[in-house]
Length: 179
Image 1 (spheres, rainbow, N blue to C red):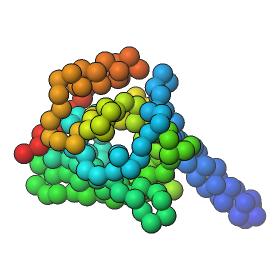
Image 2: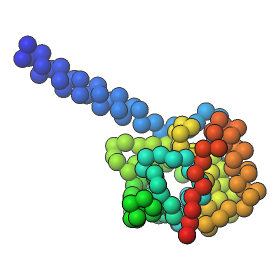
Image 3: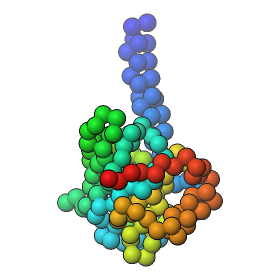
């Protein structure tokens, strides 16, 4: 019996670990396509979060931004920042993003808690890299980003139509305050 425990516990923990890692998908929602001919260096810099779905890590946050820069190893540093208006404090989370395939395709995986990675897919962006529509690996994650605190109505409607066509319920978006 003692020998069985020595084998069963590590094997069970290993299987559980694999199940957890496999649940962290870096995919892209069905029907979505990442931007091709992507120019990562144009994407770098500060972005304001215009809209998002509510989820645990950004709950009660306003004034949220994401700043992207290159790490010395070529990966992308992700610096997310926002103000928790309930706790009345600024929060910051720094992570790393890597391209899933090549830098010409805007499919990335991002991690704030290694070894757990999640999908980060730029599925629409304007020609001047001022406005971007980002999708996670499933229909629970969606962001609209802008280089400024506002977005033109035409771009907003374009992004909402694209998200709806893929299956997102855009009525659940939170429109972020920037003050």
